[in-house]
Image 1 (cartoon, one colour):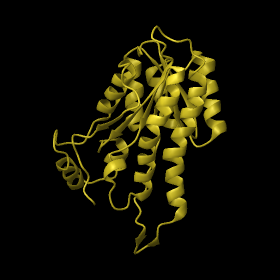
Image 2: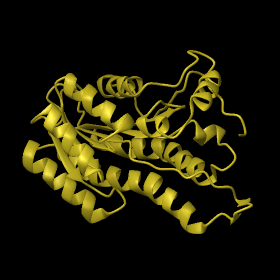
Image 3: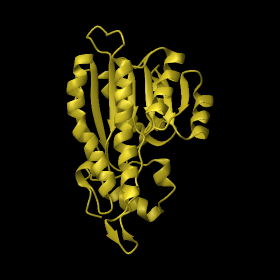
Length: 256
C-alpha cells in the first residue's frame, strides 16, 4: 500500500514509538489519526503538523471510545487504510516480593491495555477497512501491532507484560488468515529496548550505558524513527503478512 494519501490510525500516537510513526507517515504524504489519552501532547502534534493530523482522545480498552474515534476519523478523512497499535503499558512486579504478592489488579490492567486494547482496535478497524474499495491487487488495509522482545525473553517481574506481548504474537497469524478474505494484511513488530521519552526520563546515565551494552549490534538502544521506518516498510511491502518481526539489534534478554 502506498503511504501517500493513506489514512492511518495510530494508537499511543502522542508520544514515543507512536509519535515517530505519525511523523514518518505524514512525511511520506499520508494522514494520521492519533488515538491517545494524552490530549496535551496530541494537541501539540496537531498544531505542529497541521491539517493532515487529527487527535482523538481514545481509551483503547473501551468499545465506545474507539468507535467514537473511528467515527471522528471517518468524518474528517472518509476512510481508514492503516492501523498501527502502539498503545501499551507495563509495571514490573514480581509474583512474590518483600512488598507481598503480585496484585491481581495490576496484572489485569496490563493485560487489558496491551492485549485487549490492541484487539479492540483491530476488530473495529477491520470492520471499517473491509468497506474500502480494493486496490489493484485487492488490498484494502494494513494493520501493524506492537509486541516486544519480552514476548520471547521475558525478565523477572515481567509476567504480565510478557504475557500480554506474547499473546499479541499468538493472535497475529490467525487474524491475518481471517483478514486475508477482506484484503487486509496483519503484521506484528517485536521491538527490543527503544530510547523513548518515557524510558529516558526514568533511568540514570549508568543504567542507560548498561542497557546499550546488552545489545550485540549496534550496541545502543533502538530509535523511535527506526521503529517507524519498519512500520512504513510493512505498509509498503505487500508481501509482508502474518509475520512477527523482531527489531532488537539481536538482543536476547537476560533473566534480570
